[in-house]
Length: 548
Image (tube, rainbow, N blue to C red; front, side):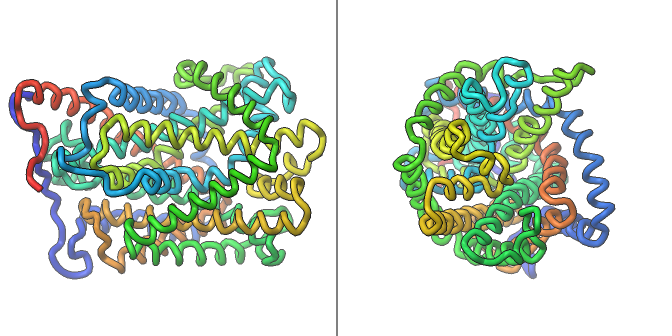
């Protein structure tokens, strides 16, 4: 009821001695068992694992397409309403005297690096190029494949997948956890976001299950991101002279290439995670933001910048105008060529992306909450949704726009469109520059990709450890940090070897499904809490934790 203060205490039992001292064993041990079982299954019976994952993939995407489309639309609407309504937008995520721990530059850098950095490098060229060739507008006969009239449509669909909806998934989880952790002094763990619905029951098995679901979803969501990154990283190493032994004849990473890449990435990320957010992760985030600005400036100065800026303007206008309809449109296979093609396209692209962002949300959400104490809901939402989205849009139009422009003009031929998605950025650089300069820029991309990979992996390791430690934020349990670093390497490597990115994709969709329900409940709980706190505020009833 709004006539009395909300619950501001959630007891989560943690061990007080031994290897799991300070950890919730009811979360940490089941999480490790589930992830270890997946690793053993994928490595010991790879053919069976591949067959099972392939069989599940189509059924899951088809059966839950509508759910993913509508629930992600809800996340975005709730975040924007809470930010734009004056009474809720000015609420501070913390006590009145709390001030942000990080500067805005470091805050944006850490959000962007953890949230989308790797995917941006892989897909800034690949996704606009793919949608330039085919998208729902082409299927419906409204635009022509690979034609000049299809450029705006290509960017509308690219912006849909990498824009406000993606960041709303992250922002919702982060906002929920920051609200309950910093205003009500609850543990910084996923179960705290459901406190208004389940109360003290979250101290028991129900809360443990929720946190285990979050840990497994995080590992699989991050594995998907790292899988894309590892493929591009190996392609980059090949471009800068590491030899052909790291790739297969079809351009995909060899087993040796995958192993070398994972040892480099996860070794560095584990060491960074041991140092904590304020040291290794912050330093790496600032470094990769600086390199990102350099690469973006390069395309602005030497790429098809006028074409890209034109695509940005037309694509952004069309995206914002069409967004309400795009958020809720669901295509179903109806037996017609057009209907089946639209449903297949949406399942392979939009539904896949919504599942990916949901699986990635516990990791990025907890991380956003960790670095956002002291900011208002309005500043948080604008900073976590609008600003990173606009940064992605600029990247996609300047980098991807250069590739499209060269393809349209005939300069590129099929050098870009014919390359794998992991190699399209390097193919674009080859066409723009002479061999020496192209090698230098490829080296910059490889270093930037490595920093993004390490930032993502070390942040994920730290966040998984935080959830397992009942919300304790400080780095602890070095053995557990090392375990999750090794486990993440084996999940990525094992699934890549079993069935490539398709195997990781299916495992990720499976992990995302239960957490999508958790996120829906978090959305309901947060809305309920904010409304009741506003009523308490008017009635002079305590609605936040007051002790330092």
